[in-house]
Image (cartoon, rainbow over all chains, first blue to last red; front, side, top):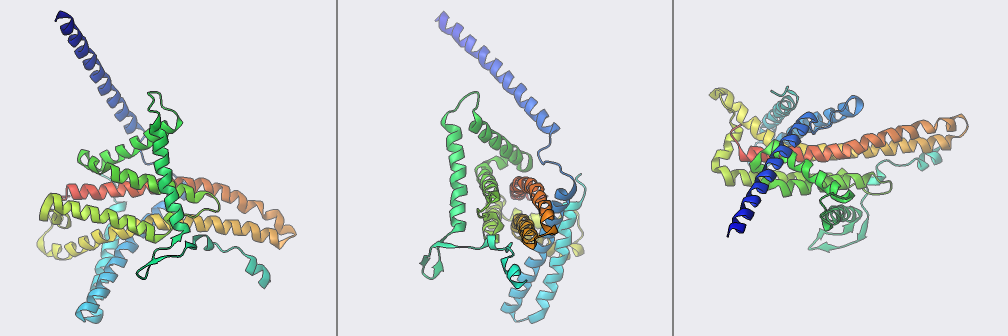
Length: 107
Length: 255
């Protein structure tokens, strides 16, 4: 009985030490991650290329979606050019809105 | 001259589909093409990497185990940072997406292979999957509260009349821009590589002084390859980060 108690106490102590070690490791890991932020920061041509293609994708996507919805809605409702004009305009606005959201400084 | 022009390599040729086993089901084409082959290769590559990595779970990891652990840690941290603790339930999904895109980007960089992610059908299918998941989970978790995503806080009513349609179009444009981003990056990279490769061939074919210039585009290809390696990784990362951002919107729609 006494032996068992002793073993339990040892086990508890070991568990506590492991827990402490884990916590310390986790904190270390977090600090390391904070130091070396995940997205590899780049410069020059490659960064410009990726930023440019990103802006293009954000803008073109919104314009395409707006135009497509307008075009199809016009076909269904028989309101030929009007919905497409309106939604294309909204799509362009959404495109600029997307670019703004990508480009605005992070707060 | 016209002969030489005909011999000029075509930078688009690398994206052509070839049917290995022509096949169709009820008029829908289901042939096994080179794209299917390389998708299969990428999927098998991911599975193989994970199986090898976890076959000998050592405390001191071997090469493959270290690679797999790095991959796991990297994606897990991305998910935790962008989508929060609750986003971790989507970790398997994001991890599969990330590793599949990464492996197929990398396979596509090997000469004479086919780059699956330079096909907008493939990237579009991924993006649709993501946005469907976001929409379905958003409504499942928040009910109609998910629609708050389209109504920014503290905006007067007259402005909302214009802003809400813009937000809706902006939401719908996500899958489009998500797929265009990956596809355009891969397409542009591979076309550039092929064009520069074509320069080498053309300069060599031109003969005389021009042959001396041939190494210049060859050097450019080496530099571009380094860039493409970075793009292959970065685009896989960007795709999964944006997936997490959108999932975060589904979990917390109230901006």
